Image (cartoon, rainbow, N blue to C red; front, side):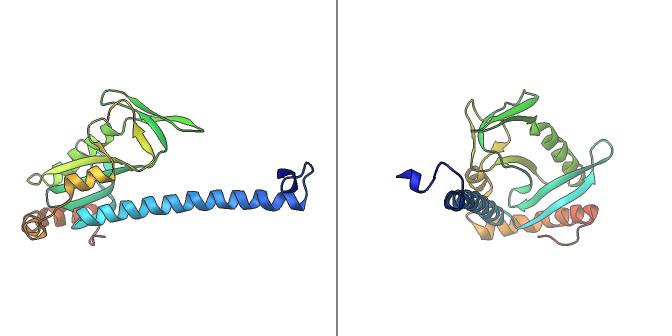
Length: 194
């Protein structure tokens, strides 16, 4: 029965189903990534009153540091680093390198907490009177099998921790944080939030 769709000798009858399978697999991958991006965008929009992306500010000691996402929330400023990996993640607060083991691959990357602490210190240096937090957000597809390190969360946990039910009360807090937010905007050279 399969021989009619996949004959032993390659030819036009075999190529068409193979191409269709590859296209279908590619469509699923693209669709999944779009859904993740929409979910990330929805969560960021739900917790952020304003946000800056790709800003560069002076480091706490010397030089400069880049921050991918800085968000103004009702709890203060939040630095977010996004990790989009598929598979089991093995990492802890004290490990220098973390490992991801997926279905077809295995790779390591430096513990992202150290860089996040540097980013938090740099922002705190600019806005001393505002709470500054940081989170490393792992998108769907990543699982920590041996426990989740500190400062690590998924999108649901991020929304639970920084989402604000009482928008009126949150806006009063935002008014207090706004001058500090504008200060970091000026320092980074970004005059408009996204």
